[in-house]
Image (tube, rainbow, N blue to C red; front, side, top):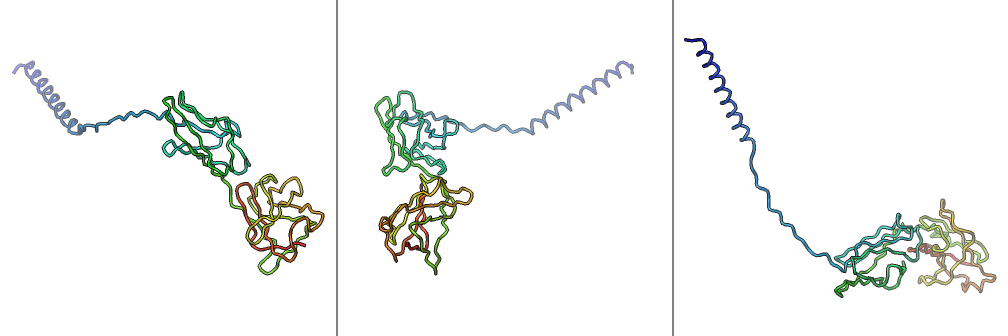
Amino acid sequence: MHPLINKLKTTFFFSVFTFSALLTSCDNEEERWTDVKEETKTEIITDLDARRIISFKVTNPGETQAIHSVVNNLDKTITVYLPSYYEYQHLETAITLPEKTTITPAATELIPVFSKTPVTYTTKAADGTTAVYTVKVVIQQPELILDDLSTATTTSSLSVFGVVTIKGQNFVPSYEVTKLFVVDAQGNKKLQLKQYNEGLDITTFTIKYVFGATTFAETGLETNTDYWLMIESYNLSKTMKYPVRFR
């Protein structure tokens, strides 16, 4: 056989073998993939309520340190989380609304922290519809702890012309919001004591008060009668477990 023909046969055989291998390789590659149809996704577009409050901030500490607040446009509530150490009696606010929506009272009006009635805002959209939001102030303050002056077996006797030293934990360090009262067995306030110095010792939670009376009669208290000492510190109050007496 002519050498050229033999060479051509060899080349042709090699080409057929290579093409066959490629076809087999493609078949195997196709078997590794499974075509899965994606689920149909539906996009729901709704109109935002023009009466809503977009954002609500308490800005007493400043815009960059605004106190955390949450607006719930479904329940129509505004929740403010107020740390007790700020000692705020009123809150300054910044409110963002949709275009052409108004709010009453205005954002410039102060919110009382200890309001006896619920604080509400009324929003009004351009079409005249309204919504009422209720403000809830959650004061973040740890439980007050008082060290009793008396024990279960011994009743302490205090002079109304002396200094009463109170110790405990978690007092707000300010005479403006931490006050001492004498109360009777029913919890009725009989006398509020006055501050003794410039403030309580933050490191030991010690605070001192005086009666500020020149005579015992000025206090309105009675001798040989059990009374209790009660601390009010910002949002919380705590009464000592055991009574004291005054002389």
